[in-house]
Each structure stands twice: as structure tokens, then as C-alpha cells.
Image 1: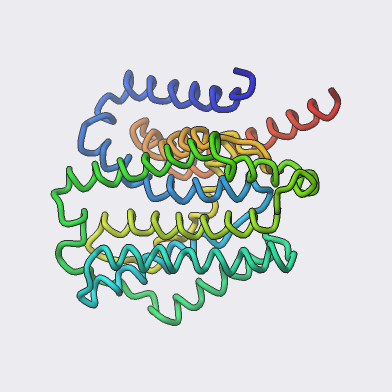
Image 2: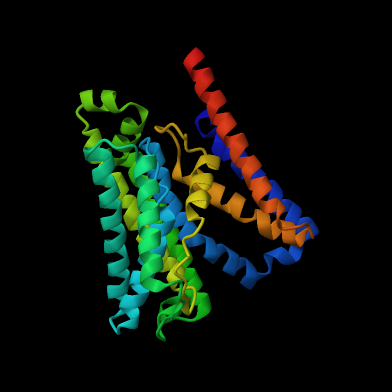
Length: 310
């Protein structure tokens, strides 16, 4: 239980928030609005899984928002050219994986700091997209929204897809050697190397997976609207990193669970709707989210200090 104390704390906070809404604003749980809010957070959840893996490996990727936007535009253009939706999905995944591989080569094999590399690629992808699309919205052909299904069925498919990815990733991190290599690399790269793990290869593939998940998240976002917004990934880096840190992923690497990431997403994403239903000014959202993040980082620092003193 002590190992999952952060996850339990976030779950309790989320439960208290949901209970307060159930008592004082029961219309918050009306079926369709609730389903729409949950569906809208699934692309962020998928992207946050990738961010969590990067942070666990003791790296950071702040280019995720521009990767997300670029993958969405590539998928939209592919679909608009008349190619099947499956090809558009594949194009987004390949584009994301290639951008992740580019970051991975620079960080893992050239030894450049990940925060500098991904800050640079954030600007590169962002400006390339701005020059390419000029900020114009792109209309999608019929049959793309909700995967060509009804809204209810499409929402269910988006939610199930995100949870399948979450479940598979959580299982892999716990049961597969690849998952244990990520934890080992984030805990101590040199010790991992002496144990027969290649930290460079591990770091490279984590960035590739990060890009792949950004592409998948972009697809899950794309199908929720009849248009593609070139800036759909703006601010995503803050949302995903915040969800990971709040959910218990140690910013210093080597520790964290993906279930905690889910709890972090659900907690932070419900702050704004809760403020609206409690008739409070929405500008409090960022302040509350910032406070929650600060408390999470402080808790992580205290945990590290206590561990080093023991």
C-alpha cells in the first residue's frame, strides 16, 4: 500500500470531488455530457502514457504538443485525399514514431539533454506546421468523424481504445523485461548498464513509443470533430506532464504507475467542469491545477529526501 500511496491519495481526492458534485450538482453526471467529457480526455490519456514512460526513463519530452498537432494534420490530409481511414491512422502513427525517433537519436546516441532537444523540436514542428497550414482549419470527409459510426458508438470506441492502450502498457511495464528496463534505466542508467541493459537503446525506443502514442492520441482526437485544428496539441505538454507527476510518476525517474496517470488525468480534467457547476470563475482552474502539481512535486521531493536519509 505504501508503494501506491500517491495513487491512493489522488484517488481519494478524485472521489471527494465526484461525491461533492453528486451531492451539490447531480446534473454533472447526465449521461451524454458526462460521456462527452470523458471521451474528450482520452487523447490526452494516451499521450500522457507516453510522457509517463519518458519521465520514468529519466527524460522529458516537451515537444509532444507539436507532434500531436502535426500527426493530426497528416492524418487529416491523408483522409481528405480519399485514402481509407486505416491509411490515415497509419500515417499518423508513422509520423509520430519518426518524430520520436529523431528526438531519441539526439538524446540517446548523441547525449544531448532531452529538455533542450525537445524544446528545439517543439519549435521546429510547430513552425513547420504553421508555415504549412497557415492556421487554417481543415474539413474532414464524411465517414471520418466517430470512425463512421454513430456518436455513441464512436465515443465508446474511443474510450475503449484508450483503456486498452492503458491496460496493455501497464501490464507490459509490470510483466515484461522491456518495462523493467525502463524502470532500471530511470533509476540508475550506469547500474542498468552494468546489469546488462543498454540505456541508450532503451531511451531511444521510449522516445519512439512516445511519438507513436502521440500519433494515436491525435487520431482519437481527430475523429471527434468534423474538422482538424492545426493547434489541437497546444498546451498538451503541460497537461500530460502534470497528469503524470500528480499521478505519482517521479520527476527524477525510476518510479511511477500508469494507473496513477489515469487518476491524474481524471482529477485535473474535472477541475474546470466542477468550477462551472459550482458557479465559480473558470480562471481558478489554472491556479488549482498549479497548486496540485506543486503539492505533488513537493511530496515527491519529501519522499526522495526521506529515502536518502533512511
